[in-house]
Image (cartoon, rainbow, N blue to C red; front, side, top):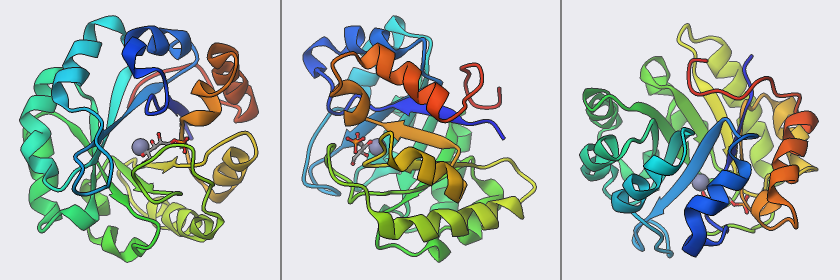
Length: 226
Ligand code: DX5
Ligand code: ZN
């Protein structure tokens, strides 16, 4: 199984975004970008123009987490901006099949994310056409929240479900992932680790990102399918 580290810049110094990314890019597989619209979640971050502005500064694969009410509307601009994968919240989608097809039409890999209270069953019908499942381990919207232990059984259930699918589907965790909780997520079967505050809140984000690679026994850095 390929395990990946995806630093999240949500709580980095966003005024120096490109510099912050360059601090961690050698140790990262993906860069996790949190798009929020102030409707789906009570916070507002950035949209496709910032993703596009960042694109020339790094070769990292862009893992875009769309915490927005109308994620399908953003897909053309995100494809144009150089996104790799887009995770859409299943709670925001009337028609997940149509949303996943729209992502594919734009050449984007696609994931479905779930709030902590959303049962795994909400994404099970779509596993054969997904690239990633993201059971959130905090309520989406803000970095720096405590890890939700109660989501670990859902991570483990997702692992079991994905093991029965022929298509390779990544299992990502996001929220409160740190040196203590990341190994527990790994043991539950997660293979993509989004880490925000534990990296960008550290004195040395670069060394901390490298330490996560050792901690989680990650291989050489790489993008989806590598
Ligand atoms: C929260 C975001 C996360 C956030 C995680 O809604 O989706 O990606 O950056 O930050 P930490 O690691 O601080 O919980
Ligand atoms: Zn996120």
